Length: 191
Length: 219
Image (cartoon, rainbow over all chains, first blue to last red):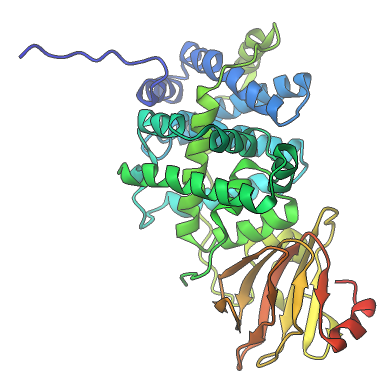
C-alpha cells in the first residue's frame, strides 16, 4: 500500500501547533511572523466587530501578538488550539483595556491555573476537530448562525440582539441556548 | 463541593464573549472558580469563539504593523517568566472567591455589614457603576419577602443555604433568574445564608412589609 501523504493544510490546528512549538523552543521569529500574518488580520476583524476603533484595534493586535510571543512556552496544543488561545488573549485584552475591567485578566489566569494541574476532566475533549465544528456551524439555520455571530463578534447583550433583530428577548435566549447546546454536543462527542 | 445549580448556558456564552458587565462577570467568575463542570463549558464556548475567529476573513492591518512587531520582538527580554504556581487551596471558611476580593475584600470576616431589615444585612460593592453587585446575609430559618426582579439577577451562594420553588441552593450554587421569576427564598436553619448577587435593576418586593421598607433601602 503506498503511503498516503496528507499535506498539512495551512489552517489546520496541527500546522499552527508546529509553528508555535518553533516559537517556544527556538524563539523562531519567522514562524511567529507567519502566525501573525494569518491571525493578526482575523484578530483585528474580531476587535473591530466589538466596536473598537481601527487604530485601537491595530494596537490591541500588537499587544495580543506580543503576549503570544512572551507566553509561547505556555501554549499547550493538547489543551487548546491556537485559535482558541488567541481568541481568549484578544478577548481578555479587550475586556481589560476597552471595557476597563482591571481584574479580568488576573481572574482568567487564576481560573486557567485551576485546571492546569491535574484536573479530573479530560483536556483533550476540548480539542474538537475543526472540520467537525465547521460542518456543525455550517449546518445551522441562518437565523441561529447570525445570532451566534452577534453574540460572539459584537459582544452584544441578549437584549441588544432582541432589539436589533426585532424578536422577543425570550426567543433570542432560547435560540442561542439551542444553538450552543447543539454545538457542545459536537464538541463533547469528539473525545 | 459540587454545585447543583449552574448558570444558564447562554449566560456562559455572554461571559465567554466578554459581553457581561463587571458585576455579572464577577459572580460568574466566582462560580467558575468552584465549578469544574462550568469551567469545561466555558472552555467549549471559547473553542467555538476561536473557531469563528479563525474562519472569518481578516481585516488588513496598518501598513507598518509587521515591521513594528518585529522591532518590538527585538527589544523583548528573552527570559520568559514561568506561570506562577497554583495558589494553595485555602481552608479559611470565610475566604471570598478571588474574583470578589476587589469588590469586598479578602474575607467575609472583615465585611462591614449594614442592617437593612430584621435578619437581613447587605453590603454594596465598591466602585461598581454599571449594574449592581452586593453581598447579602440572611439569618438562618428566615423567609425573605416575596420579590421579583425588574431585570436579571445572578446569585451565588457563598455559605449557608436556602430553598425556594426552584429548589435547594447551597454553597457554590447559582440562581440565574430573569425578570419574571417571583420567588420567596427561605433560608436553611443553622447557618446564615450569605450570597453575592448581581442585578441589572432594583429588587421589587411585593409584600406590604417589604413595600414599607423599600423606600428606606436602596437595594
